[in-house]
Length: 395
Image (cartoon, rainbow, N blue to C red; front, side, top):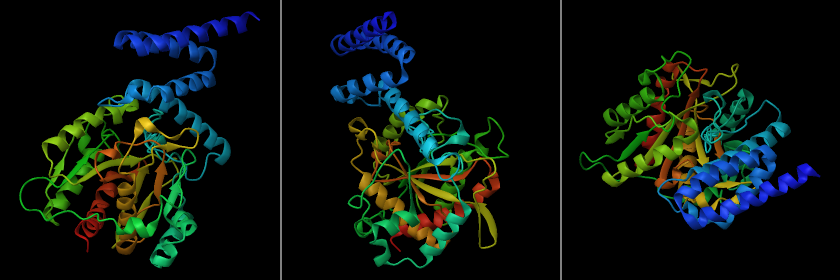
């Protein structure tokens, strides 16, 4: 009885503070947020999530800000953890799981569960992301793909996608014939103005032989290799942003967003935005393929759907370009299977947004995993550049 009375009192105090937050501005908001989060977590994690989500649904105007607020990310974090726990209970520790962070290791980033703030090795797709037999079957299916087969939603999903248990997608949204008709080409390079932006939400993601603190040995170095090939071999004008946004991995997407927006505002000529990552898998998984006699890391294209199974469409993570994003990744996947069968893994679909709302032709790419060597990741940039050129040139 005493505990019930105290719990009820605490809930009343929390609700009052939430109301004060809406009415009295930033300072009260900060104080009430900290106190409410602490008290609710002590009472019940489930209760914390329920109250927080209800508040967010009733206060969408709180998220009309330049960057997604910390309150938004606390909500996403709580839901992401819940989604992952449910997935682990249903799927066990093996199989393709799901990653990138609100994913920041939404990433959790999707990757990874970025919002979840898991270690680099637990990213978007989670441990055990790669199943070698499954990848071989996918490559065989892709080699003989036809428009008729792609029109079959079940065939399309089974052979080309991994849909994380945290989200859902329907045949209306994943319509291959419509997605393949969307123009993903870029205008011819008419000068020095950049056409493609490459950046890294998680610049610290490295490989088995990376040197700590040396970003030339992480995905940043891999991004520079890709930028160089696109410039020198294919004639694209590429801007490579080497900014480090993951000092606090749990906030990497939120931190990166205003910087990327600033770059896009400064260079309106940019038509393609590529966020280059490195996946996280179980220690006994190797994401390696051989192309033209060269051993290299496999790549994976990743999409956020701004939708979770428990919350539905997430209004404060709106992305008006989801269809265009899906078209870009599907066209990349099909081009990869045509040019380099087995080079790309299944496209990974997860909830949340991953800053892919900043440009219609936004691409989030996972290059290998922490079990790959830097050389394997570097070797993958030649094929990735060739695939990009085929899609962007329309050939």
